[in-house]
Length: 216
Image (tube, rainbow, N blue to C red; front, side):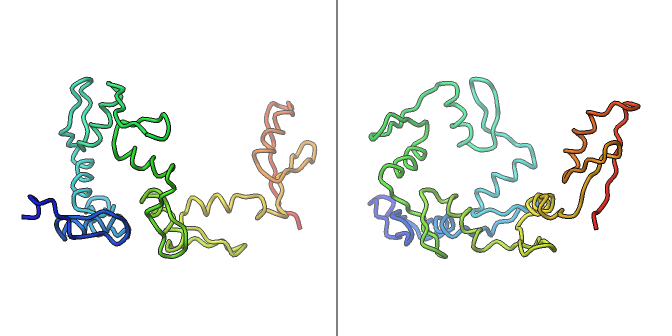
């Protein structure tokens, strides 16, 4: 009967949204907590809802049931098609009442309006920071909870990703005492690519010479 009366008794404790059914509230709460319990058995990616997982699975099967009537591009999700259609029509029906910006989707307008009101619905449970958008909160929470297994053996820094760790290791600050020396003129450089550029100034045999050593 609540679907007919419009009653929404299940209120979110994080924001002002309310729902007719408790199951809908439970699904919504996941957007605040960042919990991802639905895992893809093909690639290991995890999702907050089963609907998102089902949509993701189409990227493995190649299924794209939503096709654009203008250019015949196909999409895995109806929302992606709707967003794409705006590129053909240029229609932006959702106008901001505070400035001259307009949006193709109402959700985008809703998020934009918060920049005027200063409303930040998404509060970090680890510190006092809050955010306009849920994905910004999720990204921030990782700074509190994400493990950093890649530890530098020359300083006390640790990194969450291997890429960040490698970038750090390649910094010249950890290469003190190391040089790349030109064998033709004995000039030395802290980084190999500087030496390579320097070698171009030598034309003997038209072959650059490289000697690497560690200073004592």
